[in-house]
Image 1 (cartoon, one colour):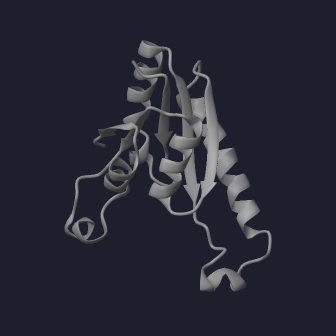
Image 2 (cartoon, one colour):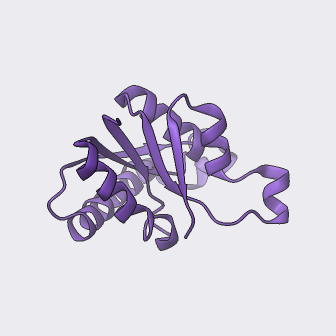
Length: 141
């Protein structure tokens, strides 16, 4: 049914992957789907604060995120082949972009229960669901 699954992970928040990884694993195994995993780092190029960071700051952050993502995948998804992606930018936009570029037809992601602040700015899972053509499975942490 699904050919390519995207699993977004926030490396700073275990709740973004602790319950979502087992779900993604089962779906990959059940459908023989490809698995893509993405983490998104902050893009500071256009921010006013960019001038206060070293020139190679983004490369260092992306490299560190890639190392952490690989360690997480090795530890939590042993035996599963996954393509790892590190993106920079607005979280929901990068998730949608990677899903489109890689042809993912399902996005499996965790989402916390909405709070008052989320009604004003909206959680990433809500934005992803509204802006992608892929199916979205939200796993509650």
